[in-house]
Image (cartoon, rainbow, N blue to C red; front, side, top):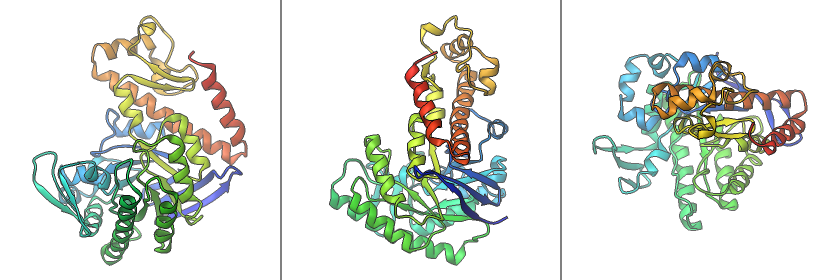
Length: 375
C-alpha cells in the first residue's frame, strides 16, 4: 500500500474526519501521535501502544542521528524493524531540537552547524542531509528541515527565518525527488511565520505552491498564549490545500485538542502525556489528578471511573500514589499508559462525533464534565 489521504467528512466547525493510508496501515484522522523521541515512547512497550490504539508515533531525527546513528538503523532494516513497531512513524527533521540549543549551533543559508549535546562533536545539517537521514530511518512521513525561532521575536527576525524555511523546503523537495521513494515515504513541508498573521499567510502560500504531499504547522506552542496558537494555526489551515493532511506540531494540553481539530488540524503530537505521567500528573475527564497528594492515600477508586484503560480497570489511586512516592518504575509505566490512553480515546471520541454529526454536543459535554470538578 502506498500513500493516500482523503477527507471523509467536514463538520460545520471546520473539523475534518479523514483517512491517511500508509505502507504501515491506515491512520484515522484527526489523530494524536505519542512522542517516541529515541524510538521509544517512554515507559510504554510497543505491544501496549498497539493495545491502546496508537496508530502513528513520532520519532526524532536529531536524537536518532546522534545515537545509535541513522546508518546503523538503516542496516538493521529501518526504524520500524529496529523498534519492532508495525504502525506509522513520523520523523521530525530535528530542526526544533537543533534550534533550541542556544550557543551550540550556527545557522546559515547552507544549513545549521551544531555541536552534539552528547559528546560535543560538530555536525552540519542541511536540508539535503535531513532528507538523507530520514530516508535511512525509513519513516512513513519525513519532515523538511525548517528554522524554528524563539518567542517572542521581531517581525524582521521572523520574516528572515520564514524565508529561509521556504528556501530549505524547495531544496528538500528537490533532494527527495532525486533519491526518495514516494511509495515508501511522504514528505511534509513546515509552515513558519511566528506570531505574525501576514508572515503565516506568506509562508503558507509559498509552500502550498510547491505542492508537497502534506503540510505541518511549526513554530507554535513555544510559550505563546493558546489563543495565539489557535489564531496562527487557523491562518495556515484556511489557505492550505483542502485535500492534504495538516499536522500541528508539538500540541497540546488535553483541554485544547478539540479547538485544534475545529481549526482544521488532522494530526497532533505532544510529550505531555508521558512527561506529566512521570511527574505524577494524570489526566481525567474532570481535570488533572496529582497522584502524590495525601487525599489519595486511602482512595480505592480508579483514576477516572469513566475510563476504560487497563490501569483504571485494575489499580486504585491509593496504589498508584504508593508507587509514585516509593519511586517505583511501575508508577511511570502505569501513569504513562493511562495518560496516552486518555489522549487516544479523546481523539477517538472526536472522530466518532464528527462521523455522526454531533461534534458540538460532544464538545459541550466535555466542557460540562470539566466544570463539574474532580470526582
